[in-house]
Length: 207
Image 1 (spheres, helix red, strand yellow):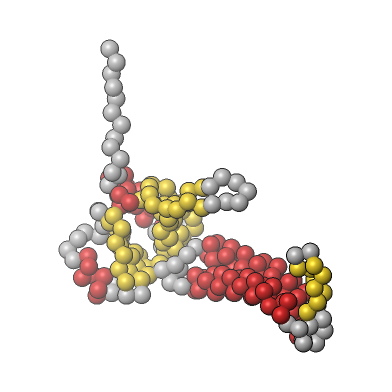
Image 2: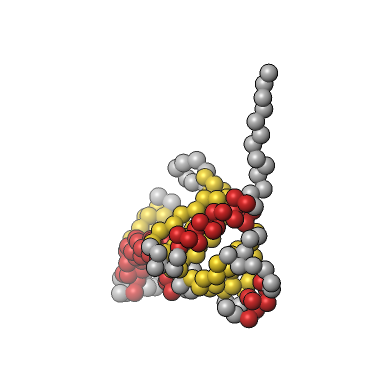
């Protein structure tokens, strides 16, 4: 393990220490890349419809505020606002694609579990998360040679949906592409239960 990580841990006992091959599960990165390609494909329809003829020296006929409008190489004013909006959507699609590709090849760094916390060393930065901040919602997939662990946290955010009720999405910690995934999952589950800040339920005997 890196020297800085060893110094941070000091004499603290270690339950496990692994190097994650990936920062995100492959499924997450692949889904984001597919979505970004769909987004760019849909946006390209408007690019070719509005801007394609302009680049070819022809006029574009469209309706603006229910008023028939014509734009062309010598009259670009009417199409500036639509072009800016389309350009913004293209930039969003490219940003999503870039982030998806970055997450696809990004390494996850080192993860070390101790009796009180989970430590992640990634690109020179150390993040320490107390076990009590995890909810105990754990997803494991893969096999004993290589697998992924997704640890749900007690923190999260509210996601607003247009055509449905708002939903709460918890923050996640991903430990991806590691060996002995089932043994490490059991250790994580044990430590989360041991450090659970929720007071245990007490029985009330009613005479």
